Length: 589
Image 1 (spheres, one colour):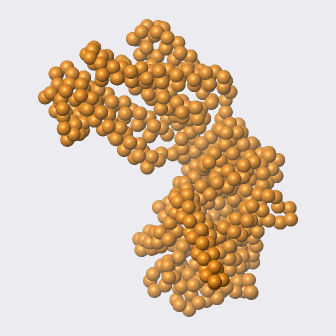
Image 2 (cartoon, rainbow, N blue to C red; image 1 turned 90 degrees about the horizontal axis):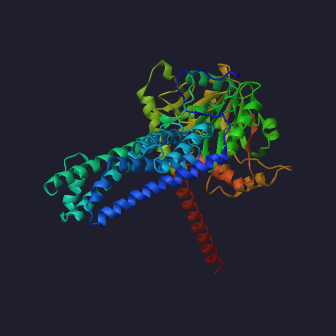
Image 3 (cartoon, rainbow, N blue to C red; image 1 turned 90 degrees about the vertical axis):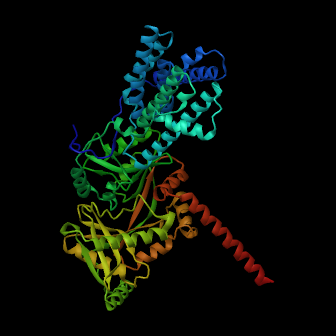
């Protein structure tokens, strides 16, 4: 058996171990489950209507019948999670088995072995789902606090609304003519069992009313817990966090590999070899950060496993910002290639400030030194410094405010001051004020470091960042690093005589869409550092819909308010065009 990771502490992640299943039996079970759940919900609604509009008070007894309410609650739960069940979500599968088991038991208790006609149907669905356990492999990765809070607020709103409706209907049924203030007060108090409706209603009716509110409350909370806490139901993939970090540092050859551990990435662990990738699923595309991180000799096996998983889940696959290390394996398995840009590289043994190549950065550094700018390393392991960390945060907050909705994610990390791990922090200071800082992240077993975060205070003098980059690279060189990296220049130099349509299309974006993202300015800003070489970066992707791949890339990088930003930029672009045309007409006149 292939060596995998030690099972000690949980790390958020996903693995794939496909088993055989029979889709025809599954599809029939899905159809039956949908129909019986809908039928029970509909029949309960019919009873409610009869109660509200009918004159026969026997319906009152029937509608508040506990077993009927439980059937209704479980059927509603089945209906709610049905759509996730079809999507192969494992939490829905486990909840469904539990719900079906309860329904079968209740039906047998109430109606005998045959349970009218529903028990055999429930048994069939239960057996089919149980025997096809391997079909439900999609895990919900990680607990989302914001989603939890939203679900809780939605649940409380539903509970309060249900309580209001029940008070209104009860008031109407028994001609109480309650004012709106009294209705709201009783709806709220009723949730806590202190409603004042006992003044107006017979004791037995009030008890049924209060019991109904409590049952609704219990049901709503059960549904809330089942959905909001669904990661608890997942099959977790356990591994040692320190083992994973060491493995990524030693085997992650892509400069972005260490960013796999960032919070905005999920992790896919191989079941067949010792390997993993960082990923995000957007727009039906399984987007992999950089390249696979895998033990030597396991490349083909792991890539085949990823492709099999994506095919099984009906997802396209994309290796974003790949170095081309596994080009042969990826192309042999049917993926397409497109050049994505170039990384700005410094071979540290060859890099210095001499010559024409480094003239601009040399001038900037000399100017900053004359002003008194100094560069220091912040070594967190030697002790925390509140002044330095607050300065970093202050600069970052101002930078984020300036960037707005266009703050990049996924291929860019965060400061991680609370868990620095192997990151290196350098900053420049002038007259007691920190004016810029850079965070370096290791790759290829610390043979290389990438300047992952570069931020400067507004109004900082020229050379604030340049001084940090040079001094930082020289410090890392003394410790054994061989390569420095200033990161990607996206879409730069992507065409040659052999380029296809997709690369030519990317080049058109580079040439014509600087209004939306200033590709050329980014390239010029990195070029001034005098890199010793540029290294190609690639996209490897499945499918023929290149627009879908491009959309996934954009949504990965800019998930927040992207479309609002784009629409604003398009509007500004149109306004500029109109203004230019008017100016031209005025000049002609």
